[in-house]
Image (tube, rainbow, N blue to C red):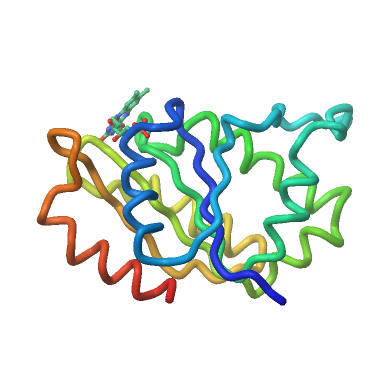
Length: 168
Ligand SMILES: Cc1cc2nc3c(=O)[nH]c(=O)nc-3n(C[C@H](O)[C@H](O)[C@H](O)COP(=O)(O)O)c2cc1C
């Protein structure tokens, strides 16, 4: 049976702000979870000498899901380095593991992000939207959040609810 939702976290801290948003989403919907900090995934290698690391087994598992959520804090207007290293490896799926890459087509991609405040950086989101398009995926939206005094601010609740509705 096809699985539904998987959330992949790439943050320099596993239990920080981005994780708080993920945990809140997971209170409402049944979503599996991967923390990239638990895996060994190396930088993209033009010579593919890194094929024994965790990237390919992880992606073989990820393609079993209908809805794939990439969760990253905003670091310098971009995705985190941990997430970028993972996303760079999608090139393996285009070049040498095409069978796995093709299985991403038609699936839905989402973003969960956390930043300092409510300012939404288009450049942050565009990287995910355009990556989805390139891979033949549908980019179906994002939760762009922030944390105040260790908590999810009340003003974020409507956006959180509508994001969760998309995943049901
Ligand atoms: C290296 C670094 C770069 C950051 N750059 C930005 C930025 O460009 N814009 C912004 O709004 N916040 C920025 N922040 C703040 C984080 O996005 C914010 O604190 C976020 O909630 C952290 O999530 P985390 O706990 O999952 O790392 C930066 C934080 C760090 C550590």
